[in-house]
Amino acid sequence: MSAHRHQEVAALLEWAKQWVGGRTDVAGLLLVGSWARDAARDDSDVDLVLLSDDPSLYDVESLADQSALGTFVTTRSWGPITEWRFVRESGLEIELCVGTPDWASTSPVDAGTRRVVSDGARSLYDPRGLIAEIIDECAG
Image (tube, rainbow, N blue to C red; front, side, top):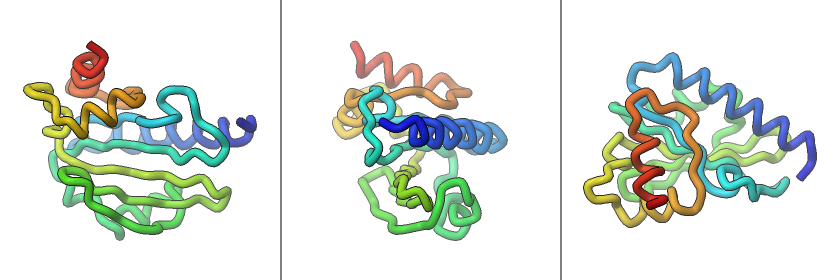
């Protein structure tokens, strides 16, 4: 992987931590997928899961105001999670998935959540300890 791409993603993750740290609705933010398991390539997208007490706060207009994400491309629903896909000028794709804290429930762990977390997950912001719990549960 190029040093440039690595620096771009590191800066994006720092921005994301600052962005959610100022929001009272956010119960957690985690990085999942290839970037979380240190297996990313230059063409790998960045996959983020944001858990909010009020996912309705995140829509195309509010997220489009976050220029660090890039240009909005599409949205899809994955059960309890809504995916918002963006692309930056550099070509880096960002998948921001937004759902409620229930996504990280450990009693029992949802099969889809287990699959995502087991494939690689790293906590970026965890004020309630939800992210640590789901990562521990899926690791054990």
